[in-house]
Image (cartoon, rainbow, N blue to C red):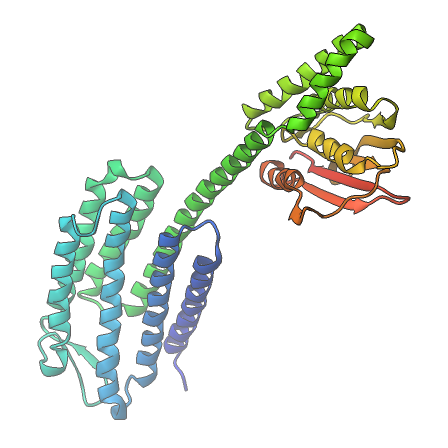
Amino acid sequence: MIEWGVLASYMVCGALLAMMAIGVAFSAFMPALDRWNRRYFIAFFSLLFLYVVVLVVDMIIYDDPAMVNALIAVSIAEFLLFSVLALLPTFFLLRACGESVKGSPLPRAVAALWGVFCLMLFSVPFTETFGFVTPECQFVRGPWFPALIAPLAVIMCLNIAGLIRRRRKLKKKIFIVQLVYLLPTAIMIAVYMFAAVDIIVAVWMVLSVLTMFGFIHADNVEQYMRQQREIARQRADVMVLQLRPHFICNTMMGIYYLCDQDPQKAKQVTLDFTNYLRRNFTAIGSENVIPFRDELEHTRAYLAVEQAQFEDCLFVRFDTPHTMFRVPQLTLQPIVENAVKHGMKSSGEPLHITVSTRLTDEGSEIAVEDDGVGFAPVEDGKPHTALKNIRQRLALMCGGRLEISPREGGGTTVKVTIPAEK
């Protein structure tokens, strides 16, 4: 009959193994973690997983006289894994401070202490000074057992001292997380020198590592999102700067001929073109979402220039009663430009474009419909860069999405959904 205490220990170990497996999976597949942090936490969680497995094996073979030699090997493996787990925070600290392992005295001192620990540990099968296994297959601590654990306690104290000494080199969040992990763990190791609390130490180390992992991961996610927003902003800059040369040249030539044919119209086109260019270049400095009304005016300026060139071949209808929402800069105008560019028919038939907005249960919806030749998913074998950029910026900056579908009766429909602001 299994005692309740033993059963509880097995249940705790099972929960720890599950948490360690989840920790390894999260570390391996979370995109926000950089390569070094990913490898560090995979190693940490894997070692903790092995440590708990060894504890379970220890409990299984304990009190079995036929497993005396196995218990000796298991006990050595248990202490060895425990010691390696005490070493890892040293490397994390140096990495967080940007210090080289070779150029710092801390890892040399830690390595020397760990070497002393290993010498004492591997002497266990040959002496009863630090501990021994009885014929009944029970591990008994020797009179000098605290001396065996003392190097690990000193290692943790050196890590704490090194952390405090380097606090100005660290982010405040990293310093606090490391201190929360190292200080209680050092206390638990000190207690372990004099009391057999293997399961308690394992539980505490697991919870501490999970806490540290959570904070480090949150910091990496924050940094990752900042990088993604910066990438989106840079893509917007590039898209603004890569104005179609033929569009500019055609517009300028159109204004040139209009100066003789219709000076008043030439003045209006010049004004519209100026507004279009100004809004494009203003978008470069905008890192946040902007009022939809501004994006709508930008689109109107662009279309006014195009309509002056295409005369009776381009007709646009606006149905935008809902404008009280915000969008990333350069959202609507490139979509409409795409409709003009890809919708024009070689036969010279007119192109009709409708821009509409409405408020739905999901949020604000923008629809751009045209009756042109239809939209191909790729252009010259490559995806449409402008729409791809818009889709990425929508997702990153406001959680929005962009959908493209064929229009009933011919042409294309592009819908943009902006979630309601909380």
